[in-house]
Image (cartoon, rainbow, N blue to C red):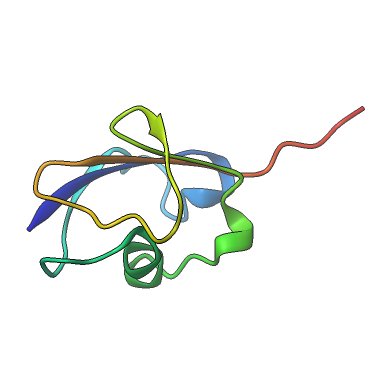
Length: 75
């Protein structure tokens, strides 16, 4: 199946290619997608699927849009 991935800042390991289409196995979770992209969970601070907050255990379906933003710090 194919999903769209939008990555920002450190989640975007190859600048200039986000958003992009990724082919993954049916029944894959967001965690599986992270493995496919060589990302760790700690690199993702905000995670959304189709514009809604999601967990790493969320099962993806054809056409989903996954957005990943790194943790934000400051003070």
